[in-house]
Amino acid sequence: MFKRIHDYIGSYAKTPLSYGEFEQIKAVLRPKSFKRKQYFLQKGEVCHYFGFIVKGAMRQYSVDDKGIEHIVQLSLENWWVGDRESWAMSKPTIYNIVAWEDTEMLLITRPDTLRLAQEIPAFDEAVRMMDERRSIANQKRINAAISFSAEERYRDFVNSYPEFLQRFPQHMIASYLGITKETLSRVRKQNN
Amino acid sequence: MFKRIHDYIGSYAKTPLSYGEFEQIKAVLRPKSFKRKQYFLQKGEVCHYFGFIVKGAMRQYSVDDKGIEHIVQLSLENWWVGDRESWAMSKPTIYNIVAWEDTEMLLITRPDTLRLAQEIPAFDEAVRMMDERRSIANQKRINAAISFSAEERYRDFVNSYPEFLQRFPQHMIASYLGITKETLSRVRKQNN
DNA sequence: ATATTCTGTTGATAAATATCAACGTAAAAA
DNA sequence: TTTTTACGTTGATATTTATCAACAGAATAT
Image (tube, rainbow over all chains, first blue to last red; front, side, top):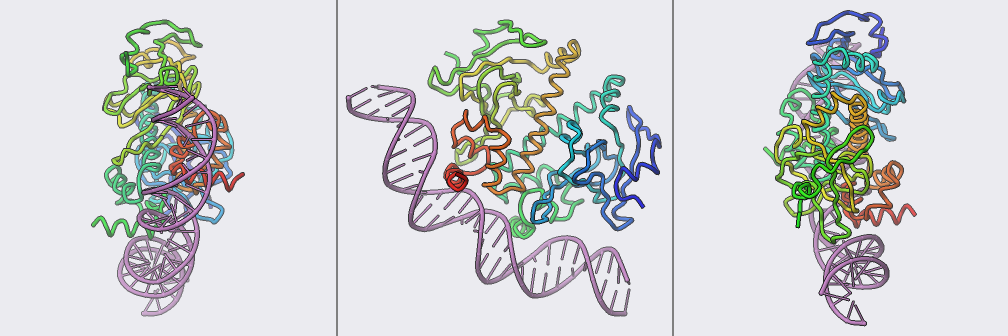
């Protein structure tokens, strides 16, 4: 029984998977099939791998002192997941990252990222573009968080990420928007 | 009289300034001395330059339909300023970026950034590190925005950026935190 | 088949935060 | 100097959003 990706890797380690320009360790998380949470990263661990989602859906969240989850990131195919701070500073993360749908990922360590970036220009280019995309998305999200009401944030979200609505339950979207599920339910009633 | 940095460059263009590994165009904004706002970037323009702050303090904000400023970024020495989305996609920005203190910056275009990154490994490395730092800061800010109350956000801010308190007025900090200046005033009263 | 859990909705009420208005002080402008 | 303007504070009130509780349907577990 493996609960975390680090254990999981044991059984998949070094399974080569060609994806674009690079081959790396592959991981598979199956929360649906096995009916339980599948952690890619747990609070307190150091984030040794960044994951690139080939197929699936994941969420990253912190837990407050009342035990409430706050979703800082929802991710689908072709996005990276991981905690940049923990990854860069080798310090324990405050986040949990788990698969929502059955998910297939490519895992890569920091040293490998740096090495591949030097060896393979296309890899470097791809990583830069994805970083840029994330950076832009984060900037927008900050602007929305400080400028918009709950209703405006929801409308902005629907415009920006219509796919997320199909693939994540509403209470997760509410958490992502920084509101309660009840408030989201009421906002949606107004907007339909 | 030049109102925007693009005009300003005219008088400073190609003044070489050695700063670490690279030399670039230098710009100076003087809101204090000249007693008026000094724009580095204005809503509607395309962000052709990213600026590296050598000395000074700046803020980046959007303006909502009621005409209220929402500060998405406060920046001091050794931070980059600019709108990544406008910069990357060559589309009009929704932000204004202005100097608060008298500010000295290095300006660089996107093509020059890409070229320098190839030519000078140390430049590439430096840019990556600053990107990473920004990315980590943004992630924290998003987490704070969706998880924390006004009071918690303020306390977190004081811990994370004590310098900002000294160099920006309170109403700007309130805006940065996504609360009104009155609420910040009351929060501070509680915490002293 | 039945029970349980997950998800979303609704109502009543409480808490957090915004808004509006007024005021005092200090700095900057005339 | 005198006048403005910018900044911060405080009080009264309004609005937004959270909390708590109950309920219903659908999916999942036993």
